[in-house]
Amino acid sequence: MKLKPCPCCRGQAIFADMVVGKSSRRVRMWQVSCSGCGLSTDLDEKKTYAAQRWNLRQEYANLKMWVTLLAALLPASIIISLLLGNLMGISLIS
Ligand SMILES: [Zn+2]
Image (cartoon, rainbow, N blue to C red; front, side, top):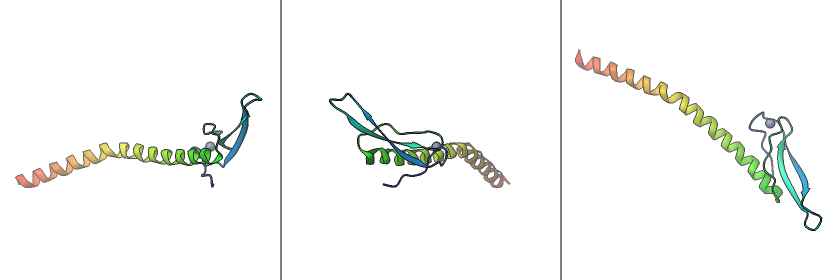
């Protein structure tokens, strides 16, 4: 599975694995972390899940960017529509 670049710094994402648990039950866990800023996913037993989580997080980051952008543009669009409404009102009177 291909890893997308880091949502924070556009750095290269890499797989990291570690063995957790006691000797009786050792589990190899995977996570994806950024080589640039150190952002990482939660540990997961499946390598593909870790990769999916990483790639999904980037989609969330993109979504968040759009929501922020729309929230910033919304007051401006309200002011513009109010101004247009006023102009139309004036033109109706005269
Ligand atoms: Zn990063």
